[in-house]
Amino acid sequence: MQLVCTLRRLTPLAVVCLIGSLAASPLAFGQPAGPHITEFMALNDSTRTDQDGDYSDWIEIHNPAASAVNMNGWYLTDEDDNLDKWRFPSVTIPAGGYLVVYASDKDRAVAGSELHTNFKLSGDGEYLALIRPDGITVAHEFAPAFPRQQEDVSYGLGITSASDVTF
Image 1 (cartoon, one colour):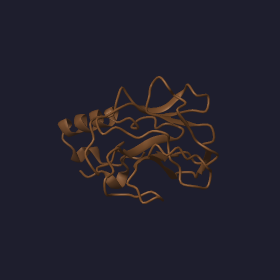
Image 2 (image 1 turned 45 degrees about the vertical axis):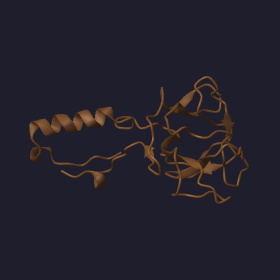
Image 3 (image 1 turned 90 degrees about the vertical axis):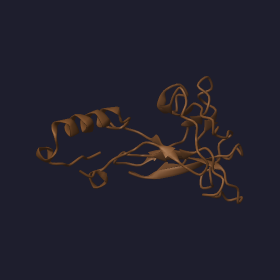
Image 4 (image 1 turned 180 degrees about the vertical axis):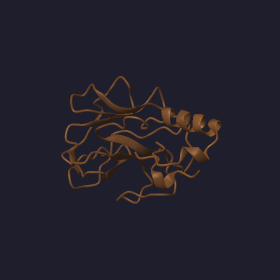
């Protein structure tokens, strides 16, 4: 993340608010070195269809690293007591790239095909996590639960770049 601004144009209160908002951001100072969940939609009723023509929930994974990462053996889960619930096949996310996985309960994990977890997301809010290949280390999580969701509105991290900041 890069933040470019001229602080002399900001009031002291604006500087405090800016620093406070950056510190509260999950990726503000020390973006995860590896893949993480950047966005998801738990109530997809009309925005994005899967290969079957269904409006399945979806989860977006981002690789912020300067090199590609193979997700083979990583996991997604919606249960904090079942961290290895759905296993990624051997799929690669390029450097700076994204991967969408449908949370459809269709359980499809074939490299080169559309990916579908063995669970759906709850619009009422629930635990959601990306787990490292050891099956126990949490790479990124929404805990104890992400908030109640709205129909056809995605939820995720507010990643800010210099072009996104307006003073």
